[in-house]
Length: 290
Ligand code: SAM
Image 1 (cartoon, rainbow, N blue to C red):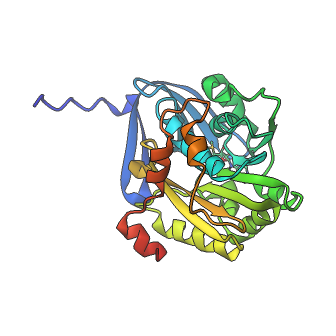
Image 2: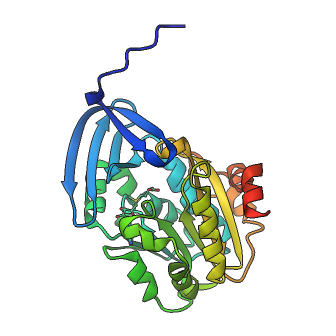
Image 3: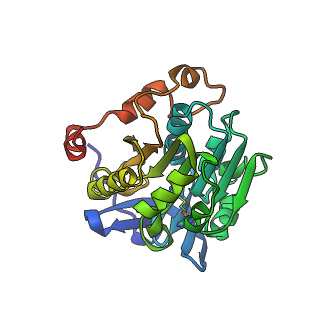
């Protein structure tokens, strides 16, 4: 076994220390390309030696060139292949535009609105992650830079097919996206059989949060709730989740044939990974009473 490589000096590593889990994640960097404080958060962009570009918000890793496909595909395709035919999709957050790009791969989608509170996230994504922004000029896309909580509260009842909440952690501007009031506004805005899907953090260290989200979704009258699991190395523990909730219908199946014959390429999502994402480990089945 080769001698352990001398740890490079700290200055050429970006490390996120995750206090809650007593763990950290680091990427070796070439240089910091940008840093700014917006009215909402601090944003940094790094160039890494092996993971492409890295965006960090308030010290938390957000997106890297190398592994964002895992997250953006799993935040979009399970919900869109579960819905019979989603025409109007709203993304809350998602300022790096990767989720928007995946949503617009579905030709049935007629209107995709991205509601990102901080315009600087998108402008920096356009500069440093242009591949994630390649669909921003799609005529079906609409980019709004306002608070998603306020936006959802003002939507016409039964006007949306799928809501995707691709937000930061439940602190600061995102805190109000993880409670029954917000879910009630989503429920009201969704059409019958509409689907809400939200990034729901790490099953290993945020199980209490996931349980509280699921409870709050049911309080908001969502009939069915499912948590899906997938890898996401960039985020704390590297094991991530999203939670789907459906209005007035169940989440027992999805359009397997549509997913199997999809007309666009993915790097992670396929029928088997969709099914696998729905399989829960024992500790989660017990926690959810399933
Ligand atoms: N994939 C990342 C994750 O799981 O942490 C999220 C990526 S995206 C950059 C998260 C976005 O949510 C940020 O750009 C942030 O500005 C946005 N955001 C937070 N609270 C928001 C709110 N209330 N309304 C709209 N966007 C919000």
